[in-house]
Image (cartoon, rainbow, N blue to C red; front, side, top):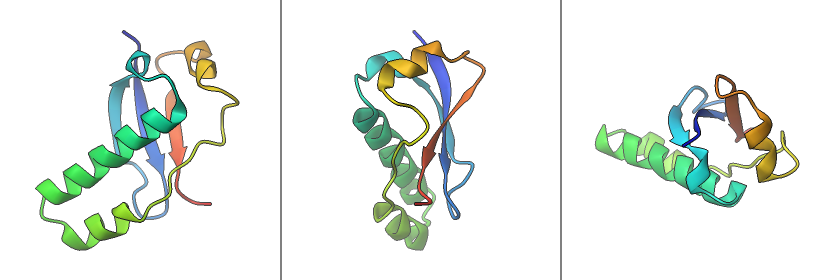
Length: 86
């Protein structure tokens, strides 16, 4: 298990984060899909419908790391940022 903080970096959703075992995923696409889904579920469960609609259109991506294996080089105390700005 390699539990790391994964946080969204975006004007509206900055700060939303989860501690995720990155070993259960094999790619950034899988990790990004998971954190995006978790954001939508959180907003839905808290009846934040307008924000949920905005989150559904959010296009998250990675541009900090060259490949998924780079995450294993990070210290577990570091935060993995998933970008929604660009």
